Image 1 (cartoon, rainbow, N blue to C red):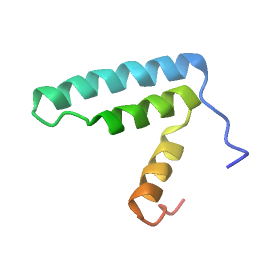
Image 2: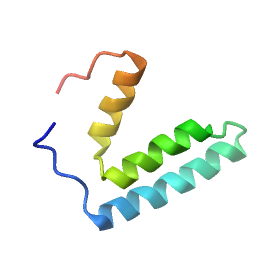
Image 3: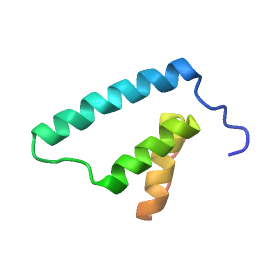
Image 4: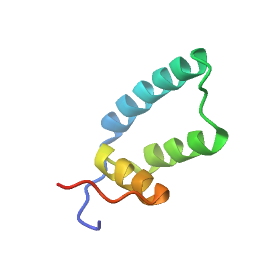
Length: 69
């Protein structure tokens, strides 16, 4: 994945804002994220990962085959 271009600071800020809203809604529905899940999403923001790269990481952690591209 060395050819992957990280998100711009503006894209990271937009993604983080969207994630925090979704995280709040999950908590309201009684399905709050665990501290480990929050840390994982914070890492995605910090590293500037694209949505595709985040999904690939999660699939890998769960042992799910990568999506066909």
